[in-house]
Image 1 (cartoon, rainbow, N blue to C red):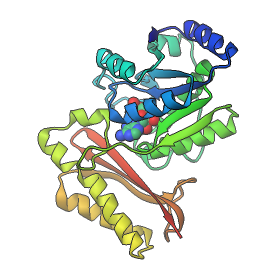
Image 2 (tube, protein in one colour):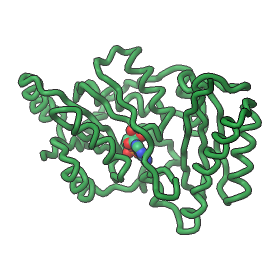
Image 3 (cartoon, rainbow, N blue to C red):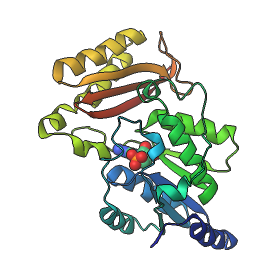
Image 4 (cartoon, protein in one colour):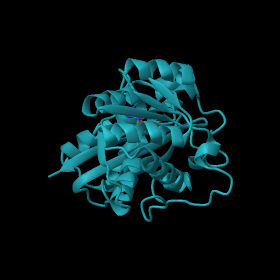
Length: 282
Ligand code: AMP
């Protein structure tokens, strides 16, 4: 396994692989790797000749009052997990390598970036779309692996890939969870023991909503209130956003139909947790 810090070095290695007609799979992350990332790396390893992992805490996707400085970083541990998952190359650039002095360009996916999480995190998805488009241009992978846990990110990047003609196949993998249902996240490490116990309300509330929908409920507002009620009754978490939207366009659905995304964001103290469920309604 090689750790590469420079874009030029990575390009050289990957162009040699491409000459040998080797396929390249790519998993972009912010590091502090867990079993959710490992699942993406496993699929990447299985489906490609070369597996590239990016570990980069992207400053452009954090707001001024967000956790960029304290975001967990642990390259040593990440290297061990990457080795276990048989990663070929870890790309670990500096912020200056990705955004050199004079950098001015932003990628903005209209309509999809300002809703749901984009409302409370203005600019976040511009940061994500910008760094992923740069990384796709640098790595030029055959396949890109993303987790369904960040549902809005998947919708936005799918649109961006289509709109900007990136020649990459997008693979979205299911959310990996703790035994009690909490979606794995690097930010779970911020939670106190008590908050960690309460954090299970996110997936519980979504499961409750799923049951109600399977039982015939179709009113979006009613489902949102059901989710809110469960979180308020069973935790000290503060709901940041709850939404029943079309899973492709992210437009709110008053009456649920087709492919529906139930999305939930809850703050435990300063820690913002997200989870979601996608349902097909006949
Ligand atoms: P992050 O390092 O949090 O930016 O995440 C990097 C990639 O891992 C993104 O595509 C995430 O959606 C994905 N990911 C994060 N948590 C999980 C999880 N619990 N299950 C599956 N994928 C995940």
